Amino acid sequence: MTSTPDQPDTTAPVEPTDDLVSTSHTLRSGEDALSYTATAGRMVLREDVIKDDVFTGRRAKAQVGITAYTLDDVDPGTRPVTFAFNGGPGSSSVWLHLGLLGPRRVDMGDAGALAAPPYGLLDNAETLLHVSDLVFIDPVSTGWSRAADGEKSKDFHGYARDIETVAEIIRLWTTRNGRWASPKLIAGESYGTTRAVALAEHLQSKHGMYLNGLVLISAVLDFGSLDFDIHRNDRAHALYLPHYAATAHFHGLHQGHSVESVVAEAEAYATGDYPRVLALGSRASAKDRADAVATVARLAGLSEDYVDRADLRIEHWRYYGELLRGKGRTVGRLDSRFTGVAASGIAESMDADPSMDAIVGPYATTWNHYVRSELEVTAEAPYRIFGDVHPWSYREFEAKPVYVVDKLERAMRQNPHLRVHVAYGYYDGATPFSASEDVIAHLALPQELRENIEHRYYDAGHMMYIHQPSRVQQSADLAEFVRRSCGD
Image (cartoon, rainbow, N blue to C red; front, side, top):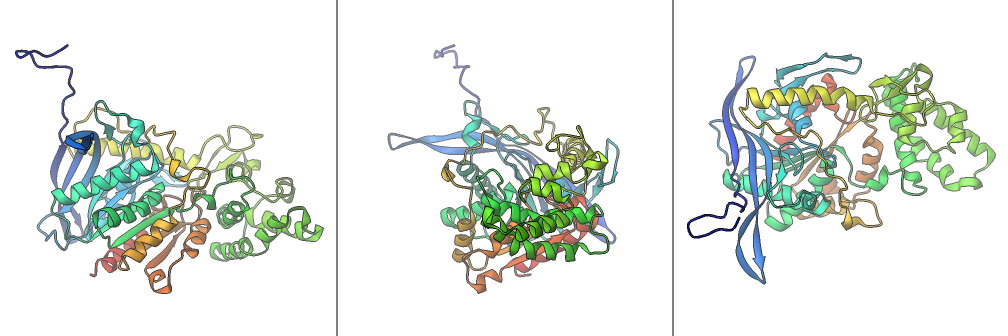
């Protein structure tokens, strides 16, 4: 339909507006009470429109879902604020939100003792809200975040565009809420750590928004450190071995030894004789190869025959299908404490990750209940726990692994007050702790900046907060990190 002076053009897209709902809450823990405001919904992301070097206005590009928690009756100029998201790419922020940081949390049980649906929702007495306001961000195509009418979703599905979009949401929220004077932190998990590091450098360099802290949970800053698909990438095989050893210990294959001692032995071997033998290839002596086969088999909990036939190189999906094959079980990749029934006793690798199977239902169910019943969001559209964002564009890294180590180095040189917290799970097979350790150990930084980096380890997996003792300890560790980073 075309427009006339008396008849408006009804084919033009309706300009979207922010759709946010604010509610008041109180979290009681013993004699303490936290009164806070929750604001949930979508913010409109707009960009300048320039044609032939002429500014013609600002156009809506996306509607981005956020959930913010701000403490009532405090000075926002001194109150820290933490921006948090998960990874994927393609994951919503529901995991950090309801698993670790937010004022409410999932009650799903744990490995070997999972709760039955429809699961529970509990107050989170250890919430980071005690020391920092919180803003959870769902990148475009996850959660309720969508491209605006007339825009292409795939334009947001890539490394550089993702950084720009999330950075703009952080800048916009900070500006609208008068929080430029607040201490600021970013917390990311998994690919969210890749995003967080790049964001820190981007925000500081482009907007002059200097950060106080960077929280990297299950970090991956150099994809080459854990990529088995790179031809002859022996580095990944060596760096996975300590995780395999911890996994074998959890499943009873290192009786009489602590997990710490088993991991220490595996790390010493993975940084010594193991990569040397792998590098030698057919030049290794028969004795060196036999010793390597025996050591890798013992540490990883596999048979020497399997390790020999695998040419000393154990790919992780195959490992999770092989470790407990004799019991008809597969082992979790996100969290190798979990096991599941094998679909086939002769399959080369497991058909699905039992740890992922265990957590998706509780988090999806609990979130959909919580956001509507307590945060009063009435959206009927499906909340995408995992969005369809693939293929994800890494064109900036064509013909080489994704790598943001240089971004972290630059951000820390640029801002010597920036503190970094790195959290590792022994049973994390998605971003194994030894690979992250190796990357951090090779940062080109002077000692005075290295002292701004702290490391914390947990007896859990990729989402270490699923393990309740780890969740409680991690919450305390993060609260202390915020206090130190923000000068409290």
